[in-house]
Image (cartoon, rainbow, N blue to C red; front, side):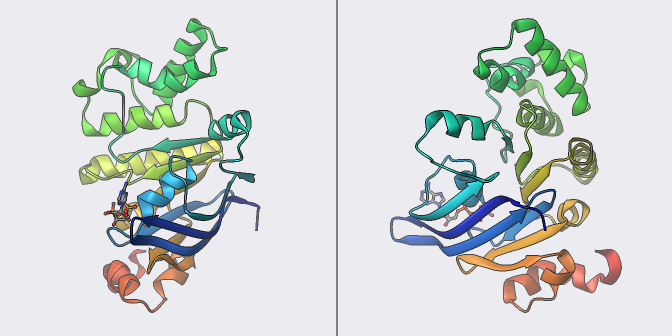
Length: 252
Ligand SMILES: Nc1ncnc2c1ncn2[C@@H]1O[C@H](COP(=O)(O)OP(=O)(O)OP(=O)(O)O)[C@@H](O)[C@H]1O
């Protein structure tokens, strides 16, 4: 198996007296699409926030792309953060910036690209997510839910990351838009050779995208492996989450 893109050891997360993760271990191999599932409040989003360095755990080690997070070396931390992209649950676009400026944001932060190059790169990213050049001038409030997700995905891909993290990528989309967004992610993943980690509640999204599944529950990883392997594990959450799929027989 290839080297892990994310390696988490002994993670402990606490909000006041509320213990969310307690000695959680998880290793995600490169090249996989790992779906992270778990009950509401099991700590999936918190885990993603920790992996991108937005939150520091009370205890434990997180290595991303072989590098420790929070190394204390600001330059090394910045370079590491440029190697992964994150799609937040609601897109998290800057509402005062238009589409072009939103996608350009991480490129401008590099401080060494000129205006013209940034413009050209943004147009390439827009085409990658199947939007048109005219969409560059729209404000986030003028976009449909599906377009917000595409713009947020283009921004997450702006720096050509090796690792893409997606928090509920299809939440809030109708079935057709959801299926179209899933096939876009799958195509980009194949074309760009990305490793992907996604949090999802949606069994259709999971079965269409994931090559591996990790189940978060009881403050740790309950099961991890292929969908077939995980579905066979005997745990109340796993039984209820995958129950419909199991009854559907060969559908998954
Ligand atoms: N900043 C915070 N302050 C206090 N508690 C928090 C904070 N962020 C998360 N929590 C709590 O930590 C737990 C895990 O939250 P998290 O959002 O990671 O769960 P989740 O598995 O992503 O849930 P969902 O599927 O409902 O989005 C929840 O009980 C939540 O209330």
